[in-house]
Image (cartoon, rainbow, N blue to C red):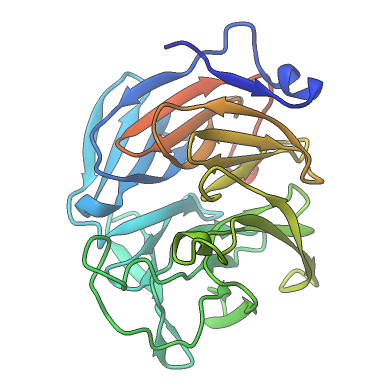
Amino acid sequence: MTLSLETYHPQFTTLLRGDSALACLASPAIWAEGPVWLPQEDAVLFSDVKANRMFRWSRDGALGVFREASNYSNGNTLDRQGRLITCEHGRRGVSRTDSDGVPRIVVDRFDGKRLNSPNDVVVKSDGSIWFSDPPYGIIGDLEGYKSESQIIGCYVYRFDPASGALTAVATDTQRPNGLVFSRDESRLIVSETSRVDFPTQGRHHLAVYDVVDGCRLANPRVLASVEPGVPDGLRVDRDGRIFCSCDDGILVLAADGQKLGKIGVPERVSNCTFGGREQDELFITATRSLYHIRLATRGCQYSHLL
């Protein structure tokens, strides 16, 4: 398909190859989300939240159902052992899939109260699991099961698998969604999507926090406003640039929040992830589909697995 680009800064053109092209790999979903690259399998897993299932696309073009009843899975990532970590709206928790293929809940309560509906997740180099917890899986039956919230707010959490401790690391958030660490893990970037619920007063920006002592967040500030729509999933490349979803594409920003350009996508974008042997391929989930584009820059996640 024709590549649609918007350039706001000359640096943006250096991120593309001469043969960069956007391709639709598959369109099996109702609402595609949470792509994760599997380096050992040369494949991508992604969630179909509203259909309560997960798909697996492999390099040979094969597409299959990975998990038919996914507990309304949303965000996915890998831990340091290469195991799948999944945010589940249905069970209102975060699960880990071990070698037997069974997804087992590792955390679903804070101070004895059920979480809302974990949405996106990242794993830090120390093995800790950081995830966002907005209410999208409990406000109706389309992406989970309608339920009352047991927690007063929507927070970002840090879970330590070694100790079993769960800590609310960001409580100033309204509707935290996508998460990504900077390459050196000194900052955590959080997408805020409360504009969906509060069109005139809600947030639609990327917030950034300093990571203190590897386990706490401090100094919250707005990094950049994102529109049209709201920011959702995001990733960073090895130079700190941010690749962030918005309604009509992938917005690329410098590490300081300056907008560099946009890769247009013909469906509403939810998330993205870097993949491929060189981490120079961007896989994008957008409405029904999984898209792909090869870039001249490389992502930095899962470097410990490559």
